[in-house]
Image 1 (tube, one colour):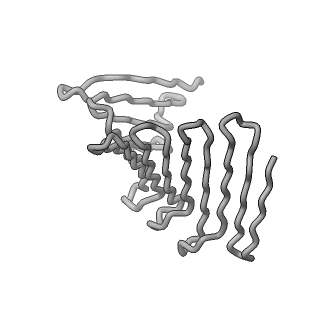
Image 2 (cartoon, rainbow, N blue to C red):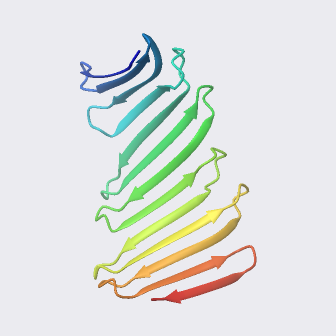
Length: 171
C-alpha cells in the first residue's frame, strides 16, 4: 500500500483562503493540516492532527499588525490541544526594514528565552545582538556581532553572565 498525499485549496465567501493537506496510508488518515489565511494576509491559523485520529493536536496562530508608522509586528503562537501555549514568537520590523526585534519563548512559560535585534545602518554596516535567558528570565549570555559596511571587519563580543566574563574578537 502507498502513502497518498492530497492538497486542496479553496476560498471562502469572505475571501479567506483555506488550504488542506491530508496524508493517508492504507486508506486511513495518518496526518492532516488545515490552514486558514485571512483575505488581507495578516492572519492565519494552522490546525494539526499529527496522528490521524480526527482530533486537533496543536494549532499555530499567526497575526500581523501594521502600525501607523509602518512598523510590522508579527506574533506566532503554537498551542497544544488543551489550549496551553507551547511557544510564542513576537517579531517587529521597522517601516524601513533596517531594524528587526524578535522575542522567542520556546517553552510557552510567558518569559522570553531569547531576544535578538538586527540593525542595519544607512552605510550598510550592521549589528546583530542576541540575549539568552534561563527559565526564570535571568540573562545567561549576550552575543553581539558588528560587521562593517564592506564586510571586511567583524567584531564579535560575548558576555557570559554566569561568570561575568566578556570576550571580544575582531577579524
